[in-house]
Image 1 (tube, one colour):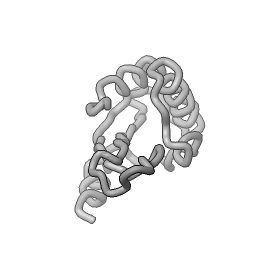
Image 2 (cartoon, helix red, strand yellow; image 1 turned 45 degrees about the vertical axis):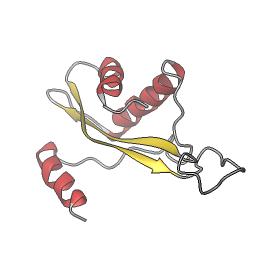
Image 3 (cartoon, helix red, strand yellow; image 1 turned 30 degrees about the vertical axis):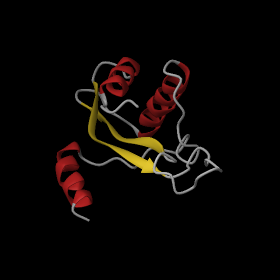
Length: 118
């Protein structure tokens, strides 16, 4: 399992043009019981689980405007690179989803803090 966001950051940074920054302010491993398939022999076995890694990826314009359409294009390219170059699977219900609406970068810290305290 790729636990830190370094490899995601490197791929994403290679996709975006100069003037667009990439941040990965949050990543977290999640243990999911039987997500990719159950072991029919022992459903109570503690080893009968899969790991997913969740990343929050933020694109921001440092000296170039960033539109939602541009960010969505970067997301599509990043997903293709992760699956193609890295051979990793993305959760089907998350792949291809439109990126979140934009917000001022200066609010990122307070948004993250409010989500972490809930």
